[in-house]
Amino acid sequence: MTLWVIKVGTSLLRGNKERNTAEVIDIMSSCISASKQRGDQVVLVSSGAVGLGCHRLGIKDRPQDIVGLQAAAAIGQGHLMALYESSFGRHGYKVAQILLTRSDLGSRQSYRNASKTLKKLLDWEVLPVVNENDTLSAEELKYGDNDTLSALVASAIDADQLILLTDIDRLYSSDPRHDIKAEPITDVHPHKQLHSLAIQTTQKNSWGTGGITTKLAAARIATESGITVHLADGRNPNLLDEILQGSRGGTVFHPHPEPLKNRKSWLAHALVPQGNISLDSGACDAIQNKGASLLLVGIKNVEGNFAANQPVKMLNDEGHELARGISSMSSEDLRHALNTPKNYSQSPVVVHRDVLVLSDELLS
Image 1 (cartoon, rainbow, N blue to C red):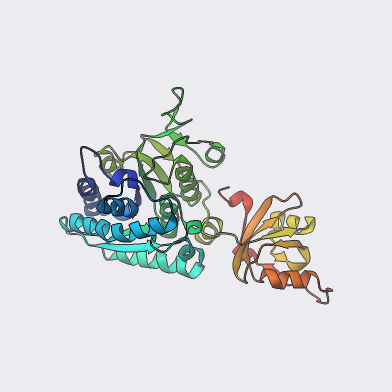
Image 2: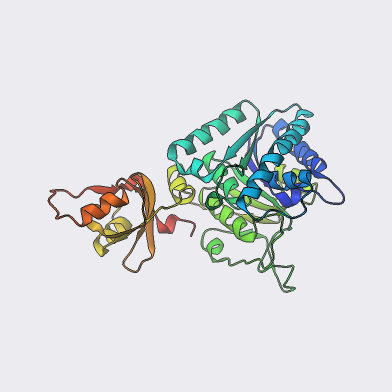
């Protein structure tokens, strides 16, 4: 049994001259249903709500403002789920809608709840269809065409493999649409090779927000969690079925040989730091080389405003990120403590080692 996460983007779901949206979904549902019948489990991460909403309104250009995007998503999401429900229903499978924002996964409890809910749906042989909650999420909370979201979902449920269906056949050394010398990349091995890739797209499809950059970010998150990632051409109607039966995508990102554990993966990838804490050299050495927690006595400065139990970055003497974790004290309390004479016998713990991850374990 293989646990798959499949991500499909707006550019594919909008269809083309050969197939409309319903036909594209029918092809996917046939492939996924066949995989489930073989005993596999599948979670589908689907974009498309905004595009379908615009199509139903007769709007040719994707809205540029966040309110317009949210309104279009509100119209399109129901239609999208109706198409999935109808298509999978013909194969005897039920679907469930899961809408998430980054803040949902930024809480450890919410992250665990989302994981448990997805796993329960899989146990019931229901197909979870996950999408970013575009009708509610503010611009700063958006994942980027669901690529990052698909990787976080894959990590949360301990998936085996992640398929990123896109409108290119594989990864290239540069954008093949603008560089005739672009070389295909069929395999990427962690972790230095993935980090060293500097793929930049010079032109983005106006109907999608996710370029190669977000695909690479998703691949880093997933592979660091021990998940194999396939970048695959979703325009090929047969390729998804072939991958689900053991073939491969145009580019395969191989899993890290020493993957992060679930909590570390959550700390590294799901959280958005709300401030910075600058450390002295002693604290840097203790955290980096001795497996220590961050104590108040090792803090030099605090930047930003954050509450207790919110994520922060920890910076070294040169201002570079050394680690990140959950601060037990608010920025206000930390500043007050730093400006107050030290009258404690033992320095308080600000970031415990159990909720701290080093920068060399991070994807950036």
